[in-house]
Image (cartoon, rainbow, N blue to C red; front, side, top):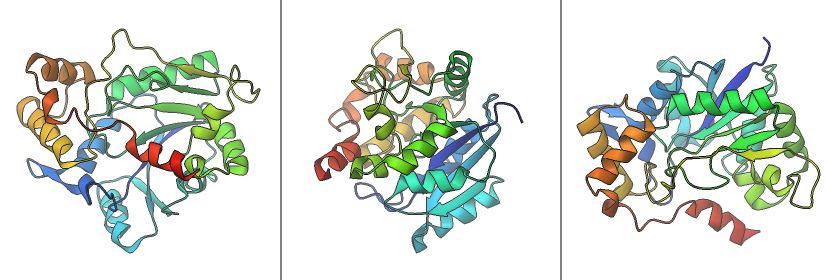
Length: 252
């Protein structure tokens, strides 16, 4: 298939801040299923893989993913880069989309737009969070599989292994390096103060409220404007964005 594009979403039960968060339910539906049902609406995605771990408690993620009609892969818990690469290496894939399963309201239209933009311009890597103007919980990365392969072969830092794409950003043209052409996918306004991810119980409280009020089929902007209009940011605004990545950097 020309331009075969596979989306990989990473999922595990062992969150230190909010264990088993992705199977927390709203209206009887697990957050993971809400996440998957949204991304399967993407028109520019050939396939979806749920990349979970070999940890015994993550067997339920593998089984649920299959039960819901998705492909799943089990790999290293700590070396997420290795898990990603091995989930894709036999798939004859040209492009990879990376999202995370703790973003239940990720927007399929936004994913499609970033995929189209990346492929049209033949960038090595495009993300809408190089400049964090989109709400936390709408983070999307699109990159060539060959770039992932190069990254898998060469990444060494703890942060590069745990978080898949830092090696790409660390070796971007324009940063004194010459490996990768990368680009930020711009947002018209700064919505970085809005959180639609689930890292802690306060995040779940907001997501639950949004879904109960608006359902699961709105756009990222619909949810964002509702949060702003109703002054709901106070629920989870004190939580640090990308706290897990910052901890990985400290380990480097």
